Image 1 (tube, helix red, strand yellow):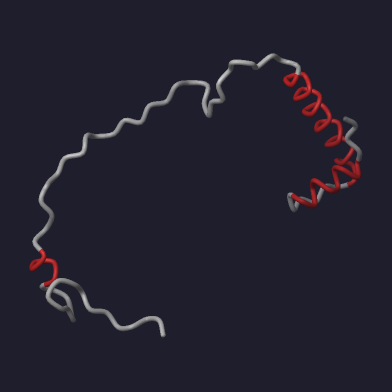
Image 2: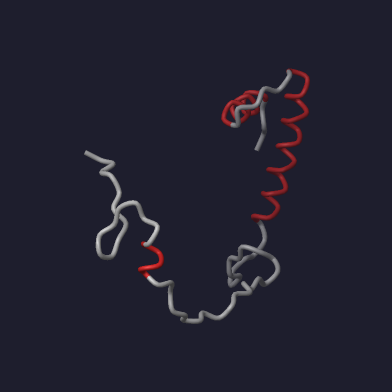
Length: 95
């Protein structure tokens, strides 16, 4: 695929970049090298290869869930300026 300066202008507009005129030809060449490399990758046989997000296997290290009693409701509500039997009372925010 031939990358033209018009395409470079279009991509730079989409990415909200301003390229000086002298850099546009250089950028066109670099983008063309990238597209050529991607075309090379498209020729590879990838049948049977599962998609992956990382080249190394990642495993999250998480602690085991442990059920513990929560804080006492009366203690939590003791500092509330307004409350009912089980919850905080707040002024109405939406009409």
